[in-house]
Length: 393
Length: 219
Image 1: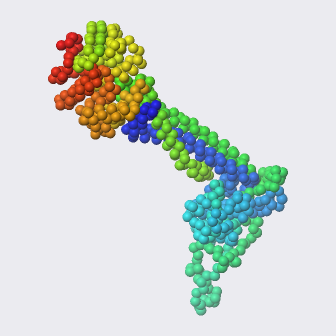
Image 2 (image 1 turned 90 degrees about the vertical axis):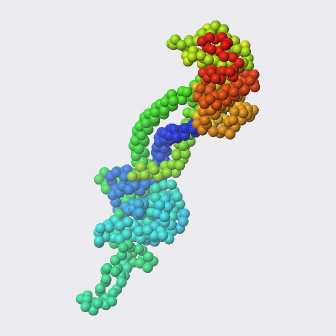
Image 3 (image 1 turned 135 degrees about the vertical axis):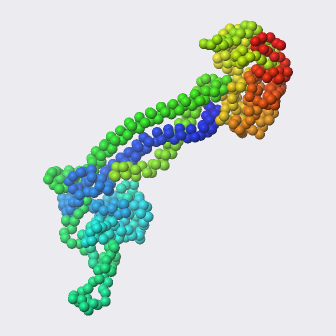
């Protein structure tokens, strides 16, 4: 067989363009369904792991899928807001600890998530560089978000203006990056985390006061010199919370009415979980409680149904491609009739001629397998990201 | 020695065939076979080589009744005892000159490609003026060089019988002479019998004997 493979290798090398096309075709045929399954598997693992770690989720009544995707995976689809009092209500039951999440905004394409410090403990998120947000205006970046934005501790980034065309609205808030979280291989890697109160400042619910420049006295002012403020020079393009103005920041209204997107409920035991779920059985309630694992399983079943359809299509395409490859070989054999006759006349048995051709096919299959494996290996680190992209967007 | 008795062969579904009452060629003889196109010269060589099996009669090569052997045995006999220089036996375009010369050793399990064979292939190439072309591909050779490479391939197994069918057909006069002389010299060195089909009457004086296929008797 050694000589068969040598001769086959020489033939394939001599006709390298044809060989390359065949190898690429076959490797692509194999890589597509395998790659799709890798992405689906990565998606399943990624989603299930996250859902398993989140026992119960409370949010506005409506789509449980949107609620789960928004609160757990920070999808771009917005969630209707609920009030902060929902978290207080859960805490008051004594059955579960609430973790409020506010995921209304995005900053430079990354989800801006308002949380309490307990969230970091719950998700086991620890800073790899710097520290967690300590004061208003601080933020900590997920590992991927930091890489994508090119930011680290000490840097700043401005939140997106939620109402750019509203002159009376709030300005973007300049956020101070206090740290970068260690990679968690979860949606947290892509997020920019701020304290819940900082999120409310961005929302315009809290603000500070800063002195603008006082111009020279205008004696002719009907309000008197001290009362004049020059608004044009003092107009800010963004708000920044500094040690100097931190003390002036305050909130108006009842914090219990402030918006949040969802509350992760951490029941103390199974009984507490059941009791808490019972609280939300009322269909007229504005909020609902969901088990993220149930929602995720339902969603994944739909995704796998689509995956199975893709499999069927790819199988059909693969069969057609296989027939085409067989046709190429058959035509190639006709073109090589003189060569085969020469080999036969030189004393090669008909069976040995088939052995030579088999060696060629085997080599092509091996090369295609190697290319396929290389493509899959190269794509493997992105499987999770691809799954995230396809499932969440 | 080649001995043929009451040989007859006809291609299936065709009126074309050959019939020879008797023919005897001594070992080591240099024999030219001539005759008009369609007379059956190539068919005769293929029958002697065991590529074709006769309908009737016997063919003996060095005492072995080739016509009585089964397919596998005929092939093994052909590989080990006969060297071919057929016009249709082209060099393989994807192999170097060296790989083409040793090719029979790669495709036949009865032959073993060892260092001795490799050295012999290089020696043959040197003798035929191809020493510096061993790594070249056939398309990089002249017609004469290609034919000499084919001769090297035929002689590498040191066959007792060399069959050449129009081996000089496509060559210019100088290369024709050089190739035939090469075949005669190489066959003579190994005491091998040479049977060469040719249309070139100017080459006939180089042979011991000429057989006209229309009159299968020595001239």
